[in-house]
Length: 378
Image (cartoon, rainbow, N blue to C red; front, top):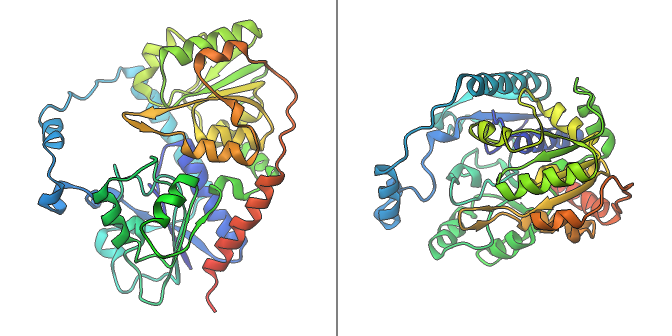
């Protein structure tokens, strides 16, 4: 039995869920029985939490705690839409994921944990902002094979403290792989272990696999531009509106954070859909005329479904979140698809796409080979 630890076993994020499902199914396709470890990661302190030692003391962290903004009260319609989305996710999850029993911290670290192989990945499991030691597989039996698959750091550099801490935690996994060029360089510089560059789990499957997953959707829209933004700004909304008007298409969008819904519903010239499960998300990309996004996984599925797409950059605070998109676009030689919002007005719409997947397919074989070799117990 293979135990798969992910960023959140019950995640309500489309990309996070779809990569979780994809990695589970990839492991199963290699002849193993895989279950996702249903572990509540909030039971552990962040690797760099104040409670881990005085060296991590930060006045800014304390100040933020003391001056924390009041929780935003959501209106009744927004609260209802959140409940409906979670219900749609949970129904789809029940049919597509195999979860273990609920596990506590002591369960995870029990000597009786019954897994021959442990896999942790993918997504930003090594982002220092919410990393926990378990994401380095610091648990499991002594004879258990431990594999990190397609870890992402989420930023282009690590502090001295982060490097020192990670170098110790990197002693736990037997096999290490990451999904960005920058992460490979960073991790290679702090460990003597080999660090492989592999594809995100969503890219381990052919288009046919994802068409079957999308066919579970009941949505059936036509002649629309699909917008999905993780970092929603006025500039992105304005450029999408202008692009849609110029090309006589409707906009269909999924709000990432529901507290943005009321503000942007007045600015976005189109439909905001809320009760959307992962199959619906796939289908909205699959049937779109053009996809406009700042999301890595929306870009992934635009490539898989051979859709015309334009990708905006995204920053979270002072962190640039674009490294994984740059790596992805490099595989298909489409770096020109990442643009600034104001440049969208000069771009074309609804062209027939024929994306060259040769390099991506080659990397897919290498990534599957890495996973297969790492899982195999002689």
